[in-house]
Image (cartoon, rainbow, N blue to C red; front, side, top):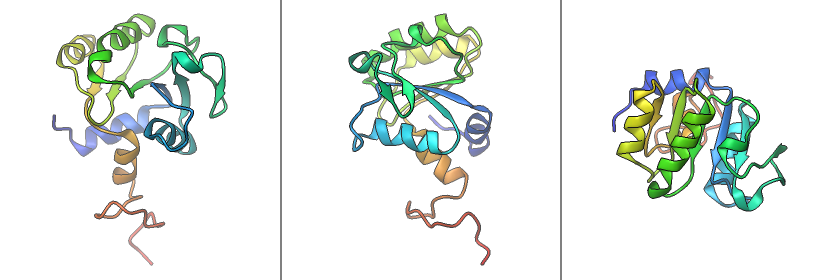
Length: 155
């Protein structure tokens, strides 16, 4: 899939609350550090993991599934295998009629679930990471992918 920078930037700018499905409590796992990074950038991150339900992670209660989340979210970020995506998308679409974005992490794609969400007017991003895209689009990375510590090319 090809996504324009403008499209990805618009999604990241309009998003305020993200449900991260498949988050780990292990700080070296990508699902944890991506969620932590997004929280540090001002997003509210709601963790979803049935094995951690009712615990607190990154300052938020962990929910067993998206249907249990009492608040609205703008984006569902999926850190699960591709074959696990359809029931997550179905639950998210049922829970939030006005959901704006389904985001599937690097290596995660599902054509049928994507088509179902798109038919409901939901933006779907597959095989991408919002942390990487945020860093790239908001000038936190240079071409080699390293953090520069600068937000501008001016001295």
